[in-house]
Image 1 (spheres, rainbow, N blue to C red):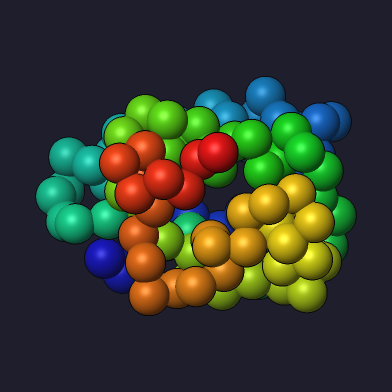
Image 2 (image 1 turned 180 degrees about the horizontal axis):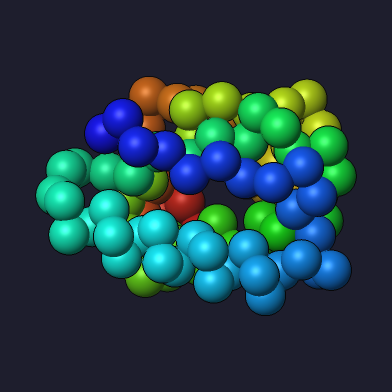
Length: 102
């Protein structure tokens, strides 16, 4: 899929509701288009907290396959710290069945 979701620079609790709404709308639109998985970019993320990562984990809990196509150093460090390092391997799509959400 060429239409990827760009995570915002501030992926934290303060924008979680707005980001969630945008992400769900994007997922709905792109799921209708078909494809094996959705692509998400975290290249611009400069600040992230647990609630930001929970938004992505929720995709896995919905059974939606997705993969991370780009990641900032801040985002990568947060993933490693909070146990989501497997998201950083862009070769895999993540869904509940693949065990990405722990």
